[in-house]
Length: 173
Image (cartoon, rainbow, N blue to C red; front, side, top):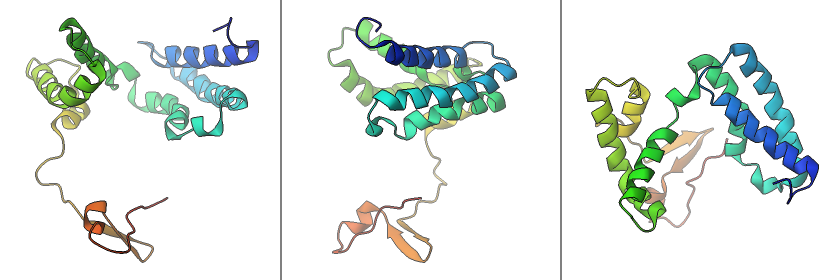
């Protein structure tokens, strides 16, 4: 990137990469995570200088909360799904599948459920409860509602609103 961007921009992007490298290391110390929590704010401020405002959506903002989450729950490689997604992608690549992204979107949910259940049956430490619950989806006893009332205003799901003239299916907090 150094040859394509000015010095300040490339430094900010390298700092962001370093932030995620430290956050995703196999062993982390609480005091290092506390330092990361302060550094990500400065990194994002530097990025605001050259990225447009539309870049800073909720996903970028989540980086601020990741060190605190790691302090509470431990290293991220035991909670993030990237290794499992990568395993599925590698299987598709080895099978010479064309349009891997589309195929992964189609096949991943079923493959993910089967893989996590297989890991759980083997007693693998990768198949933590949260991952198993995510892979198996909501249980049959989950209540499903077609609307809610917030501050005295009734909101409906899009499916229920489709047959009505006036629609109000969005809730903003």
